[in-house]
Amino acid sequence: MQNSDAIILGGGLAGLTLALALDRHGLAVTVVDPIDLETTIAPQFDGRVSAIASASMQLFDVIGVGEALRRDACPIESIRVSDGLKPLHLQFNAEEVGTGPLGFMVENRHLRIALLDGARASNIQLLAPARMHSVERLDHQAVVRLEDGETLEAPLLIAADGRRSPMRAAAGIRTAHWQYWHDAIVTVIDHARPHDNYAFELFYADGPFALLPMRPGTRSAVVWAVPTADTAAILDLPERALIAEINKRMGDFLGEIRLAAGVWTYPLGFHNAERITDHRLALVGDAAHGIHPIAGQGLNLGLRDVAALCEVLVEGARMGMDLGDPVLLDRYQRWRGFDTMLVAGGMDVLNRLFGIPGKTASLVRRLGIAAVHRLPPLKNRFMAEARGESGHVPRLLTGQRI
Image 1 (cartoon, one colour):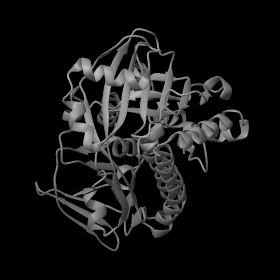
Image 2 (cartoon, one colour):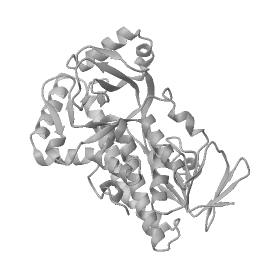
Image 3 (cartoon, helix red, strand yellow):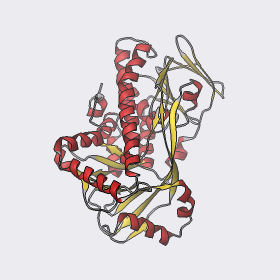
Image 4 (cartoon, helix red, strand yellow):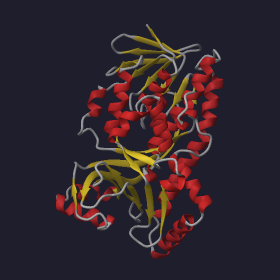
């Protein structure tokens, strides 16, 4: 029988980040994942990259992995948003804020390596691969029985087990969900001219196209949303033809380009859990919500969950409370429910607005983003959201311990 303060189901980015945050504040944590986490740090695993907001990087600093991430991260000094390659744009510059980069581009592989190294150097009990046989959420504790016969007990279960969360389904928590009928094509390119730490979000009627700075300064990640009906044809293109299609969308401002990595594809969809708590259960990250990758807020939204839940649990533990107490879980639900709905809904509306075809719609969009660019209060609000500094910000996202 293994006893912990919390059992985290899932050793992905959100699960391991939460485990480290709780461990750094003296709570005993067990992480259970059915796959060997070593396989997730192989270069060929999935090719994804993440835009880490500046506030999220402060969370990583507090839990001890920020320095390792910065070695491979590329700071984002400017974000430029436009309707394709047409005139008028919205641009955010770090110098307007004066407190460092707007964010950092990091390969998910490097995130996993840093988190896994941190977990192995901590007091976290990491069980992976380990498959669950059964889960019981009793009156005074949660009990997890593994297929190898080991039994785990804790006052709280935390589901960080992904978009199709088995634990969410077992708890009967429904989701609002739909498909965008688009796939994200992800790759990396080298280009002749330096990117100068600019991130570009170019919107087209058939899907947004993001160009994201990476190290060295002549390398960028491409995240290109294409209609699902076209995905297979694009993936079948010879390399030269694929480069031509990418060039068509990004223009030639970075000079000649070539592929610097493989090409991956992922279906795009939306889901949002009707609630993120249940009896002795809390959801974080993709188990709670999944949004369109437009503006790169998906992982940052999950890290806000992590920071808020950690603060609720650590403060509850200091007061001697049962970590599965409905009072604590209700605080987490109220804290994160509204913010998640606003961000998820905003990203969905933005994606649909930029997907409206026609010259008139394009003109209205361009005038709108140009107006935001020239209105400092509104522009600052968008910048605060991009940096992860809007709303009720958990202390970990301000770089403070709890």
